[in-house]
Length: 510
Image 1 (cartoon, rainbow, N blue to C red):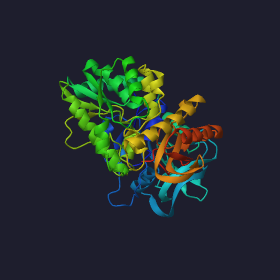
Image 2: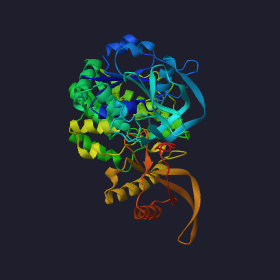
Image 3: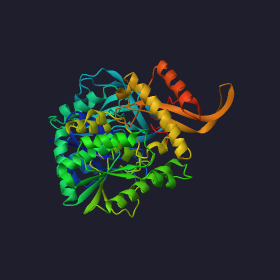
Image 4: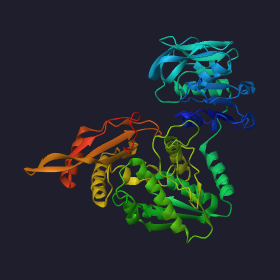
């Protein structure tokens, strides 16, 4: 099996590189930038990618790789910081730009017939994210593309096995990005393209069996795609030694607990129901800071699981449906990654937790998890369910969290998604939800003055949750939703819509 090793220098896009490569049916594996050469060569790489990163190659302690990497006899592709690092290590010169170049740019090819740019037009748009730039190429390298300002955008060595790109081909904003990666894999690395997620399932079930041994595993089910796929996958690996716990944390959507339990009966999962709503709401009293909310909920989840686990013999493991975007945003991906926000299943686990954590999906994106779910024959209504945050409505109820405000949010959210489903848009939207704002505004209802709360509507489209754009919902839909919420939900007199993308915002408000 072909194997592309990605050396992670701290880029937020590193796992996206792996995902793009896997989409082209080539196995990819991420390793830290400081992985020993012995381990890298032991992986028998077909090719190597050096990722981008937030630092300057001239910074003290900045990520670097061994120069022996270029003597392995396999193709190497450096992206952004990776190109600058290659340049420095191989005798070229890297300088600091007067201003950071971030976002869309246009490049022009110097050699349209090179392997990497085969069948690509001579000028196209790319996504830049860098402050430094190449001042002089290493000896033996040729310039393959430049920006309109003359900044080197692509280079290669004389035999076309070592390449550098100053832009990110892995992001959707780069035109021809997939074609460039495809050319690297199949024209430069000579990959076969014979890897698929079916193989991943077989390998992961074997890994789970080996990891847990004869122990029992507890899974915290939420009703969402991630935890459900993780549970069915683990059940496939260890059978009835998987004990599932569904916790009603009081932060679920309208009628969600009853609906979820009914779905799990269809999957024949062993599910214990724990009604801990009062416990969670008590712990959240007076908590308004988003990070503290997430960590409080994470700690409480674990305590509930540990209490439920006391009655389960040989329970040693906690199964979680953590995905890679969760890990990235929590800053736990690798050295140099920034914390955007902690996820309860990544950043909120207490140090004295009795259960060991198993996370079989932590290297996957949502669309890959859905594909695995289909291969595992999980019902479509679960597979197509929109992502729901682990902390639930607590991070959509801005400010204090109490039963009254949660009921207000549940009612508004139910109306919003009910209307979206009526016009058959639900399955085409990555996430659609309501947010209760911690502000009040003046209104008029029945000729009387009101001073009530505000609901914000949020709907985004995305492929993987790493980037997202707001959905241009039909005006008629918004009109119906706004009127219904103001008429049917007590305490709300204003509805607004969030029209920001990710970045600069995140999908969830907290």
